[in-house]
Image (cartoon, rainbow, N blue to C red):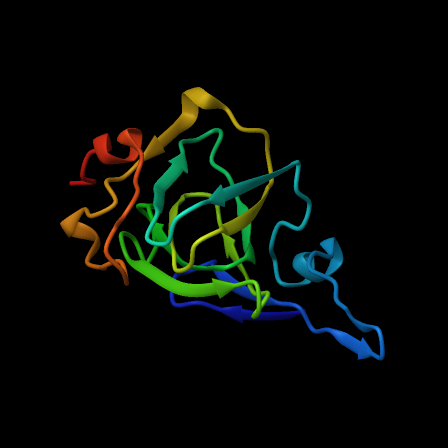
Length: 175
């Protein structure tokens, strides 16, 4: 696996390195030893999937508060997404900075999102599926969110928003 540091402290793009032959390829997508060698969490307690029917759907920006903050490894397994993370750690040099990247079924890359980040995505195709690996069990009372278009975050979604939940629309601005 290739681990590429991103502009936000502690976040990585993790890309499998396939071994190919006449059958196709085989690639590791998670290896606790490889993640640990980069100082990252590599053991995940929960796996979830998000299926999205329409292009332009936005989910997020979601996060969990301490002591239930979650580290996530997010990969698009069908279709394509514009994935966005926001550093919410007050002591971080990249506090309140946002970063977005394209994850697709074809590029097979994953985004490693440390605890203390908000996360969201916009679908770039119809029929998009996103796989989440999460280091701890979900605690509903710890779930929070930022408004998807909070002006303090200084980023824009690449496409018009076609679908967003009432819950996500109701999240407050960070400021």
